[in-house]
Image 1 (cartoon, each protein chain N blue to C red):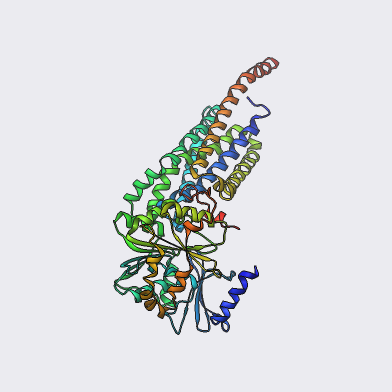
Image 2 (cartoon, rainbow over the protein chains, first blue to last red):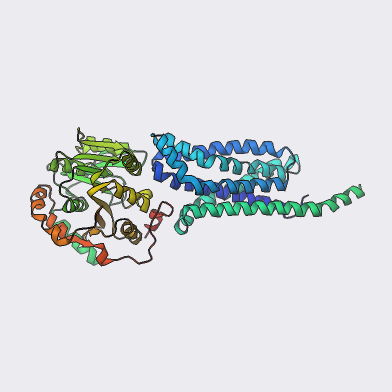
Length: 215
Length: 300
């Protein structure tokens, strides 16, 4: 099951999910502004929704990792994440328009809109962290070490996602193009993980057989 | 460099320097959005948002003659009256010290004036230190300008004059400089409605801003002088009238605006038609809600 490149793959995936989450969070301000303005509570709404959804994502991801954890399932979460951020680009205006008409107070309007747009994809992306830990940890002793490196990598990804999106991406691309790029990136990485899972299973079986014979 | 500094100095000296004596900070507070300072220098009282930058005066008034306008760009905004000299409903986005609102109320006591300001602390300071007043005709709303305009559209309201004064050199609300926003503002204008927008004329953003306004309004007037970094974009819902027709309205306006230190004839002489200058590259990208890195483009 474990090969030399599997861990680096998981770490890079964690890096990219951190990158995309913060990239999307940052674009959130831009997406909400036409309907809810750029008052300070807009960021309150966005950050709240991202934190709440990440926390649920952690919970769900941890739970999910207890049953038949595999690189394939890990990859599937990525693909789902990639798919579920698409509505942000495709339906944001319709969704925000509907909420704008219903809710007069832009605080709760923006909170509703941020929930509608970002809750599901962020929950899904949040599931990845605990799931990565499950895939990376091979014994109890190293669990803290693994979690430490993982947080390092994914949070560094978040930091870079924040700065690169705000300093550069918005200069060259439209908001939706950036979202599509993140979606493509996440889906592609997910598919690579699923593919890698197949390859490792095919190569890992004989190894197991060998070990069994030696014992 | 010298070419632009010298006339500026001469003008300052000629007009009587606005900074006599020492500055005294009358009030300072940190709002949700910025640092707010009220500073007195002799007869002059100014509202400042930033401590360090020199060009950060948002609004000033002469305490002894509060109806005399201090800033050139404030005066340039009055160019809007050349296009429509009888505005009945006025929307001001960005309150500052509220001098524009006060002046317009004196000029047009019957006009409805709505001031929209995102920062409640600015409204408070305008009331307490700049004599900004509200009454049954004049209101101040603590809201984001984009939102106010969207809601006003839903309520089928219209304005004869929209004054956009929400930008300063340090920060631009990017959602107030997109095609979609300008379309909304245009929709909110009555049939003879006019929009004046206080912006810049020097930064890297200039071309983008021009292309975006041109995309939405077609032709517009640039109102600026060589001394000031500000430019006023003056445009309207209807196509712009001929300069000759406009010049006929000046005499009457001139009399009414004199007491406020606004020389409308000089301002008229500063007006140039964007369609004749076309001083931005043909392929300049239009700013939209999808693409609006105004603050990044503004870094020279």
